[in-house]
Length: 114
Length: 115
Image (cartoon, rainbow over all chains, first blue to last red; front, side, top):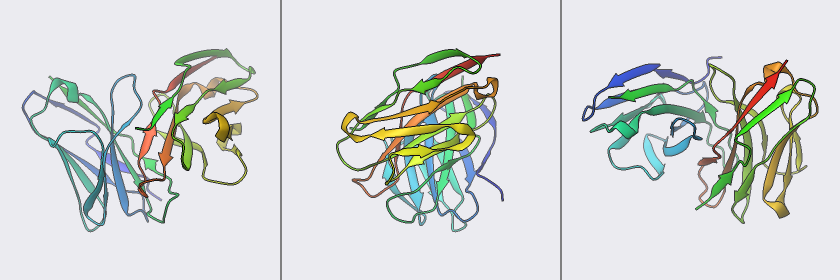
């Protein structure tokens, strides 16, 4: 049973560029959440996708956008990259079954913005 | 806004010592509580979780945590740590007011266990 997978593992970009990160959820899961983990910090919620729609968003600017496909995989797009966007980006998947869900995390994509 | 505090940023223990990592959250309503662990070079893994029922929950690798509602706390414990427990530990809370699963994490505690 494959867990949550993410690609690429590492990425180097320059300021102003755009980046797309990808996530495949754990088998049987239909919900994908994205988190940003800066160095020395805990993960911070960016947004969550369910049924191909963004259903909740954290305190991140519109430069951060996403998409979910019919097979439940998801993408995180960041436009106009800033140095401060350098972080580990984590994808987590879960199965929407009411109020109590457990999120399972992928290995993350480490983004460095120069 | 909800927040999670982990007061111990770095903890150093010798093998066989007992461990307790503190976690406090700020939210007065119903919560789901989690501890995740990140071993060196590995991804975040679920250690244990509390949804309802018995406030003392047991997780993998001998870890347990106790939910004390009156203290807004969910401290992680292990009676005897091993070198392999060296990792970063994150407490996370999901508040159930929105109906959606949004985890709020603490800043993490780095545990170093010396052999």
